[in-house]
Image (cartoon, rainbow, N blue to C red; front, side, top):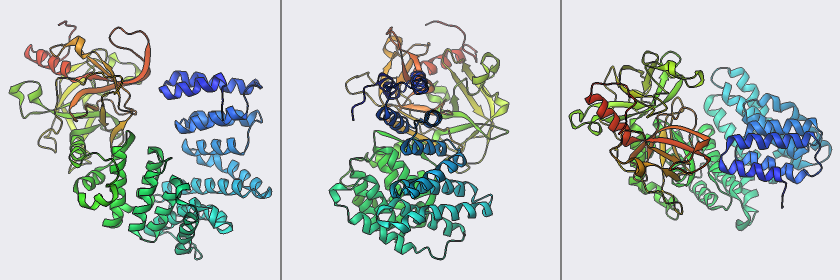
Length: 565
């Protein structure tokens, strides 16, 4: 399908470039075209807009788009489906239910099993999510949502099992989860029959015509039967499917961990989770959240147990993976000491990188806009915590819940300069030495084959973020500044981060620290005298930060003053 409408082209370009402002402008222009009943904006254009917004997970814009299509009576089953999915993905699933019920009833009345089953599957998803959210706090409510979810997935499957494999695997996963938590299941739910129906349906599709979801469904059906060898083989085939991508892989991983609890059931089941995480780490367009148990499992697994699974896949070496995970041991979360909510990230560094006299002393390093003795210089939306308002949690340590209070800020520099804050803790941290090496150089800028920049941060309460998606180093001004510079140098890269990543560690391909992550945006000024802006993330080159700390401390200062080289 060829779509040439200029507004669709503008939206596609802004999404591909990660340009948030241009994306907002493009969506507003498209909404205006719909409201003005622009005859050149046809259903093909509407379809592409929905697909693009979905692929880039712009769920908020999808709800806006769905609302205007409905109000202007341009909606179809397909647009209503995308609108309902966006409502679910923006944590307003109850708003989607009336629409989905109407869609299911309409599909049933028109004898359109495809539309009926799709709508019922989404109703099942709504109640599945509500069941999972309430299962710990409101068991009666959770039981109601569980029953409704099983009914919504089950009705289409009972009518036509051969066309409802994804309904069936959700039935199986829900039943497994509910049984583990002690919830009541329908007496007529025969899990073996459901699993066998999926296996039969997928096996009737020629192997060369199966897509990712066919193979993933087959894997889950074999998980339900505890047929680990068959599940492993199906998963291998899923990863080889042409339409496999990190978004789908993460969906399967969440299903394995959050519903099936495969990581906790047996050695055979845990291997599937461990290997899928390992495979995601190896992909160029992936991002993964790992908690303490995940990291321990990755570090303790026998490589021989994984060989049969990944022997024909391109994987990073075991040594590289172990090194990558070990770097995270020195990355911690800075939290509000009262609420416990994460504010940013910090890392432990060895004092030897500041001065030989400080070798073996551990310091924490974060951004000044995360924690500062000078919060009043910042705007309300960037106001940092004061030291007495902050604490540090080393969630990957033997004491993950302990809040380490701040002793003092040793040195700092404002956002507009180094955006750095070096501080100590009142108690010794729970690890004996920093696992993060620091180097004084940065990778070369090679546009044709960009160098990699990885980021480890702690945006979530309990899990580290290992970001290795679109890891291109775009530019830096290190050569202009030089290794002895006191003034900050900047690194620009496409590696994505989320709120709470400020203070994260920017690593080169050898997993050595080259920068302190501090900002990102859609209109970051280009470096080295180049005109214009672009959408990148930004780190402060670590070497000038260390140079400035060393110089100021030697001169008895603990705050950067306007100096020149």
